[in-house]
Amino acid sequence: MASSTARRLVMLVFFLQPLAFGSWLARIPDVQAALGLGPAGLAVALIGLPVGTLATLPFAGPLVGRIGARNAIISGFVYYGVAVSIPAFTTDAAWLFAALVLTGSALSFLELGLNVKADRVEKATGRLLMNTAHGCWSLGMMAGSLIGAGLALSGMEARWAILMVALVTLPVGVGVGIALPRYPAEAAPAGEGSRRSAWSLPGWSLLGICLFVFGITITEGAMADWAAVFLRDVFAVQGSAGIGYTVFALLVAAGRFGGDMLKARFGAVRLARVCAGLALLGIAVLYLSPSVPVALVGFGIVGLGASVGFPLAVTAAASLTDRAASANVAVLSFIALLGFLVGPPVIGFVAEALDMRAGLAALVPVLVTSFILAGRLEPAPAVPEPKPSPA
Image 1 (cartoon, one colour):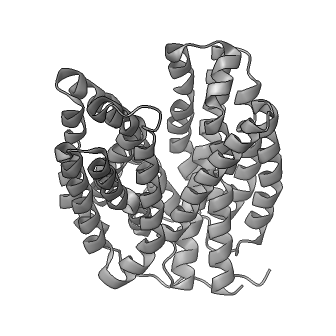
Image 2 (tube, rainbow, N blue to C red; image 1 turned 180 degrees about the vertical axis):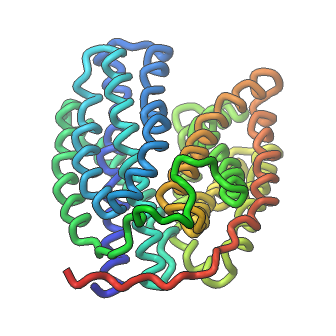
């Protein structure tokens, strides 16, 4: 298979994966109204998603390492296509929580397979791909949200709308997964004594990469949960307060699409340090912003700064040779998700004690840590990859 074809297939599968989930995000208010849940009840039910993700990742790493990323994508799309359709059919908060645990489990398994496969294709073709693939994921998430909003405007019930998107994307995703190149050594070789067990504690190199990405994903989680609140509380923006996160998300996607080119020119470490520095600059702009337009510039700078951190870390973790790439990426994903979940409550506590500007300024210490630990992203020496088998 030509390298360009393999790369396009990876980009396509990254775009397809979040379409149904983006549609679900757009219909959460409708599901909340249908179940008669208040904000607290909905918040508790939504915890099911990270619970399922965190509970599955320790097992997903060894499993993906055993069956190979390509098989994980094929089977993962089936699991995910079913799981993501269930939450909108639930009848109470307890069932919604359970359905979201299942959805989170499917998401973690499939996304782990996607990241490991992107790394394999990147190494096999000798061309950078990871940042662009994650840019396609960002576009898929935005497209899914737009589809969900459009179907809501058309009057289609949430359950049927999400099911329809899932049914359309499932066979396409499976088909693209089958078309992905097959690498003979994709699954971790059994009994390879030079590698540590997937269940062993991560080494110092992986811990450094994880701490780097922790600061980045804390920032992403903070923007997702607090951007609109910042504009409302600081500048009394009503109705259109969500524009802050929209600007952030658009610049994240833009940064990812340019990330591979910049990485090729400047290297992973220098790019990571510049981006961490941009994120710090963006936080400073937000803290000092005198008006909404300046604040939006700040959100955009933070978006650029946070854009390539996770893709760069995935490549660095997958390149470590102490154990299977799937095991290291699973640990990285676990820590990244913890950062995404931990950040918003911490900022909320600081904002409650001081104010919203100080809440976002609480991101400075973790971003400084990311800046310092960017050196951990130095790639390991390249090992020649086997050519795809003809079958």
